[in-house]
Image 1 (tube, rainbow, N blue to C red):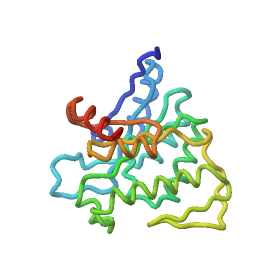
Image 2 (image 1 turned 90 degrees about the vertical axis):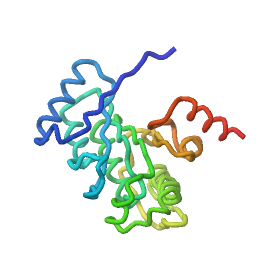
Image 3 (image 1 turned 180 degrees about the horizontal axis):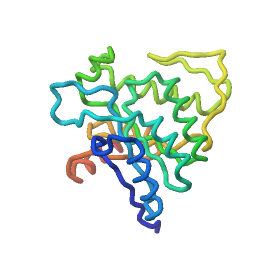
Image 4 (image 1 turned 30 degrees about the vertical axis):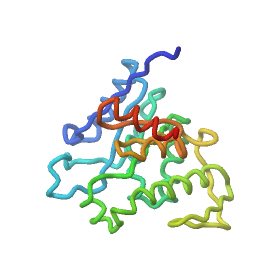
Length: 213
């Protein structure tokens, strides 16, 4: 039986208006023995949204800094809103942080839920699930070869070179986060783990059973 591994999440980040405060807190958590630190993301926050704090750091930039301040604690993107990113840029950023941290990255991914954020980014909200699946397949293709190719619905590339890839092989763990019905299916098909968000345990059990059918 594996030992229980406990992580920490410092949201809301408005409590750390200077980045040094957050860097110091994570370094302290490593000293205390925490296994991982979670950092979620929102790229822009609609004014009418009263569920979100309005203060956000860029996760990859913050993790790049943390990779140099820490030695052991794992860095969990919790979660990347996948359809808001160009998948090639996302693959490059996460691979770079994984190299800097010597393989301490876990990429937890979600489809997003704040419609106004998608509108501000110019990305169709109703396509977010399909884009997430396509983008994740593209990211995995980029991480799996120095000369990758991919032909998907939203992403296509060939005759390209992607170097360096991530430190971890074949790639950093991909956790699928969310509360939607498709979360378990997506985790089984495209991920290495599940990060359920919200809802009773009975809902997660039903979702898992539905996936088996």
